[in-house]
Image (cartoon, rainbow, N blue to C red):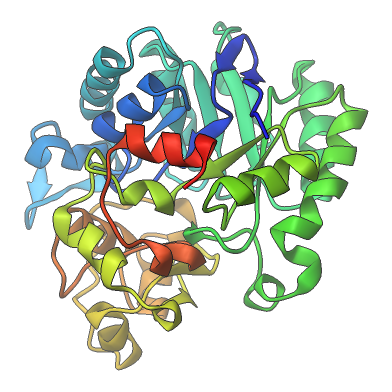
Length: 363
């Protein structure tokens, strides 16, 4: 199967492969810039940009961590990442992934528009007011992440009524993705919520709103998987974990090694302060949290609204900002290492170019 290009708003993605946004610091300038350069769509994670370049842009630190949401997310750090990625990508489109659950969501969306991001992708909640923050930037394409046809319908109705616009594309994420899920624990294992069973109803709903392109995500691993999704009606795919296995991925070498070493049974769902189940590799941290012996929870960075300034972190036993940033810095004892369910299949580190060739031409 020859893959067609993917159109999102005014932007044409030569190869219909979107690299998933992974934070803290897993998909920043090097990974996103190179994916776009090679014809896919590189996605910069806006989470924790205060950690970029050894916290050069973080502002005030407490215990070596950015203090409050104003420093955990650094506009200056975000700008530096985008500038660097643009140098690598040339004139190719670049996207930013901005979590709906973060504190200061609207400000980060406005910043992305001001800093020249072409496409904004938002999940971790239902972004019913996303267009509100992009007023004045009509060329910025908006892509919500959903987990059902019902969620897409709600977004389309609200956007059309309030803002007279519709999503330029939609990412449909199934429960095999890394990180936070749009499902309950029970739903994650139900057949009706598996990606292959969600694509057709979501494509059908998208057709009612003017054939919005549907991008399938969660467990897509190789060319055969991409072809399966296309045959079901998807216009493209989003892949995160597979891109961790590239030289250009911004993750620490220790992070890559954790995924390389993971066995099938090591990747599991866990509770998260964000309020959704999250998928990652069982590590030393997991065992410490289970015994309630994990690192102290201080809520220095106040990263996500649902955590309620550390209250939910205390319930589940870890601070997500601290543990994801530890993983970014390669701290094996205290890091939280997100991975999709197929992460155990990763067995080598290759270049982004080689991976894109494998995905489009076959292994």
